[in-house]
Figure 1: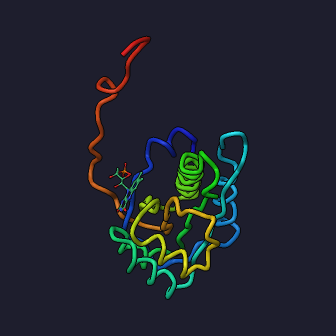
Figure 2: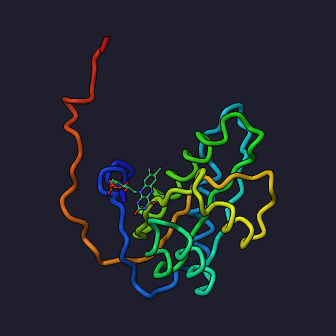
Length: 165
Ligand SMILES: Cc1cc2nc3c(=O)[nH]c(=O)nc-3n(C[C@H](O)[C@H](O)[C@H](O)COP(=O)(O)O)c2cc1C
């Protein structure tokens, strides 16, 4: 897909087919996350890739608004080092790269909140994540035929301001 089509056609998808994602594609998607910009090029991240069905089920049961994670082929949890002052922005940049790279491969996803959520601690313990890392996001990935309803977005004219507000 063309880069601009990827950006403009991406939608959050929460219904997935029961079809695995090849490992080389998953690695390339994570590689795109790794290449995101970071403050001072600190790259404070780690990416936990979960494909095991039982693990997906556990995460889905914990994530308040992520019950559909259990049906995903994979879920990537983005972590960043908490002592890095820009860990939230850096992790968000990596998350969006992952979502867009997946879209370019024809793989659907949905950003599920992870930062400062009540379930962060349980999932971190379950995944044996070191305590200096903060969960930034959970990104279920999978093939899907779902066509989300027409999107409701603010018009460009409401949000663009030329030269001054
Ligand atoms: C920080 C963040 C947290 C989100 N958390 C959830 C979530 O927990 N569960 C969910 O179903 N969608 C979640 N979303 C997806 C949003 O609901 C979605 O992006 C929004 O409705 C716009 O739809 P679109 O992605 O199709 O443009 C989250 C998105 C962001 C950026």
